[in-house]
Amino acid sequence: MGFLRIEQVSRTFPGVGGGRPTQALERTDLVVEDNDFITILGPSGCGKSTLLRIVAGLEAPSTGRVLLDGQAVSRPGSDRGMVFQSYTLFPWLTVRENVTFGLREKAMPLAEQARIVESYVDKVGLRGFENHYPKMLSGGMQQRTALARALANDPKILLLDEPFGALDNQTRALMQELLLGIWEADRKTVLFVTHDIDEAIFMANRVAVLSARPGRIKFELRIELPHPRHYRMKTSVEFSGYKAELTEQIRTESIIAAQMAA
Amino acid sequence: MLEPLKPVSRGTRIFLGAAFFVLFFAAWGVATFGGFVDGMFLKDPWYTLRIGWSLFTEFGFIEDVGVTIWRVLGGFVLAAIVAVPLGIAMGAFKFVEAFFEPFVSFARYLPASAFIPLLILWAGVGEAQKLLVIFIGSVFQVILMVAVIVGSTRRDLIEAAYTLGADGAGIVRRVMLPGAAPQIAETLRLVLGWAWTYVIVAELVGSSSGIGHMIMDSQRLLDTGQMIFGIFCIGVIGLVSDFGFKWLNQRMYPWAF
Image 1: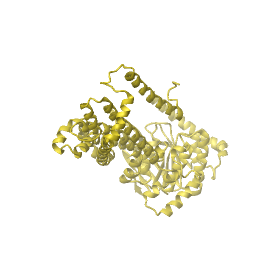
Image 2 (image 1 turned 180 degrees about the horizontal axis):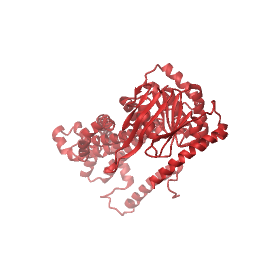
Image 3 (image 1 turned 135 degrees about the vertical axis):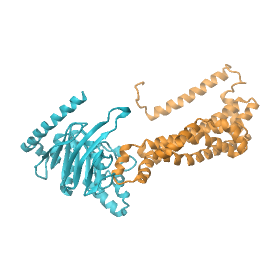
Image 4 (image 1 turned 90 degrees about the vertical axis):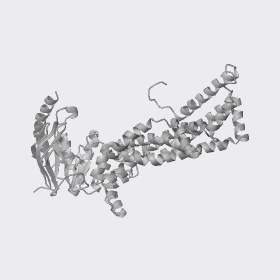
């Protein structure tokens, strides 16, 4: 059955100025179970963001369809929360107002809104910064706010498009643990796009590897590391085994991608 | 000192700004008191100041100033009431933009001053004509600038709002409007400056009151002192209103500054 089904989805962008159309995604399938945490791993420019944007409804597939909980996706909606790689907090709203954005859209009673928002402000560790504007926050804090904003809406699935890609290594590691902690507590269904192999293994129950452009899911790897996960696992023997396997897969694709670019 | 984009302290900034004014008046003084320029063409600063004082104390110049300010604000507010909503609609909806944009772009190049003879014919030489000159001079500019500002709302913010469940109306109301508001306010500040040009032009032709009218009268008396004082008054009022506008913007949109 599957909670989220990606069926024969492809995407071709029309050529610019009479140029040839570019195929970003080849017909591909993916089934995500309820409460699954899946990372989509691929070399840059392989169309992994495009795939995620199609699931979000921000782009239409050229072929195929996406089903969420049996419903075909045709437009963006609050049932699919998203965190982007770029900082997308509304600069005119404080942290608290940003997190409340989706709840206000739902016209939920104010007391209820406040209760939910406060709990997520605590969960992502932003207590004391509720009244700050985004420009006063570090990159990591902005992404934590963006995560809280997406989670507060209680989406059926959380879509993450390299959310920690712009952060430094230390902050990124802390953010990974934070997100993993929230997932272990709430068991949300998550689709997480990344080009970082360590991140893909550490976060996921299953890693889906995308081929070089045009992208297609060519390999899936189940990650059997136990939960709760700890950062020390990144140096374990099992982790290294997964990493060796994925590195080999990604390397092949990166070489193809580099040759295409040349 | 000439390192690109190196900030200067607040004190230095005020000092340098004031220094140029001092330099300007000194040069004026040297040119006139030194006898380099005939008093017929340019009166000295001291005379200008005294004649200015008497304009206020003996000739009720404050009323002229008041009338002119009223006209500028009136025409400007009218233009803003029409232009801001229309500009927002054009920026947000491509359909509306396609309908209005070509005409507004054309109308923008029509010089407001060229309408004065027509407007006198249509609206007489009363207040309506003065307001209309300012209105025509500002409205098309504001429409286009607001449309561009709203149309250039960050795409990623719009997408984020969509994924948070906002619909089209929500995007306009909760993303485009608040995001564009500070820049719209800045645009209005800019256009208010231009409105001062139009009002004086309107007052030079067919008017019986206002700063422009006083300047015109002074020409008949060959009093360059009064003319220069009138021009200076406009500069001072412009500077004050500009500061006020800036201050208000920074108070209203602290996140943008």
